[in-house]
View (cartoon, each protein chain N blue to C red):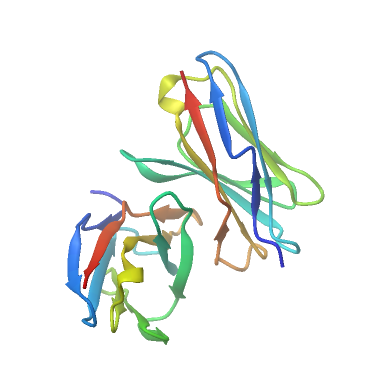
Length: 110
Length: 113
């Protein structure tokens, strides 16, 4: 089992709809969770981080964390073509190392 | 405020050579982490430095090493290059060890022939 798992996609979502990206992790001692966006040929860009159970909203983005179920998700409302990218989930585990998932490719179709 | 800078941006080496990559963190950031990104393995953690000390190390062979200077700039070195070392090497900085939000540099694309 991978330490951080994501569906590789591609996930295709119509413009204006909600895109839902999911991530599960294996280390129950994990405390910090991050979502990065990476455009093709570019480096990852931090979108959001979440430490506590529940939801955290920032503009069109909402991160959701459920430590009991060991999953974290990212919702993108009113999806735009510019949201088309690979989304990386990262988890800081109990050993204080940040482990990245393999990423989910998101495609927003006009 | 300037972002994370990495030099060089592109590098071509041959098997058996060694290479040194450089990373300058965001001003005021004291923690620097290095990652290797390949299409097959994704983003893999190499090591993390804070105040010139290696705090964490990933599962890479001893050919991969790094260091951090008193001004927080960091270098990583790969000796005896192998074809499989071809990758994008990313450096990320964060404020200090209490903060987890990392900001990535543009990366160094290393090609080993």
